[in-house]
Image (cartoon, rainbow, N blue to C red; front, side, top):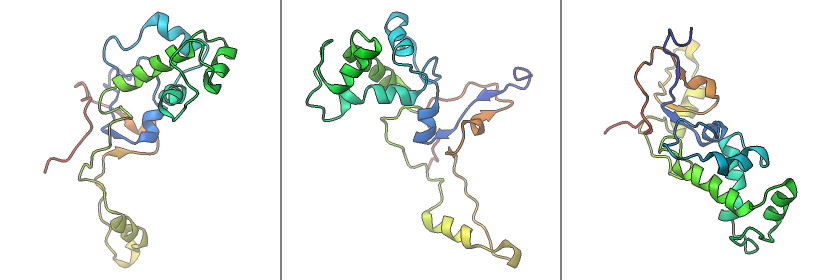
Length: 174
């Protein structure tokens, strides 16, 4: 039925919260050669990576001001020690692999690229005015044309979308 209706996951623009909820494996924003079976086995099995947020959490030891962390397989920092007790042979290598996957994601799904203003989202004042509006007494509501999906991934599914979706975020052209 889904195939007959051309059902597809086609978000126009995702909030950072929803980007973190996407699956880490076979990610639609990952270019070819992002995943490597042998390298990613430890990420899946030992580290339990299933979502993008798990990848980000694993590679935090590389980003934080972690003076204890060293780029060696026998690093003595707390994070690497913990990973070794779980069964990981080279925690730094796994963290670097997780970072590489996150960085390679296309602009639409990448967490490191800053969110561009799309020119569509209402201002804070307009949101407040809409909240105070009494439609029953004739007050007007301002339409919110924002294309950002913020609450649930289920809102990103589209039907009759036979064309492949763009990997670029949606923007309003001035």
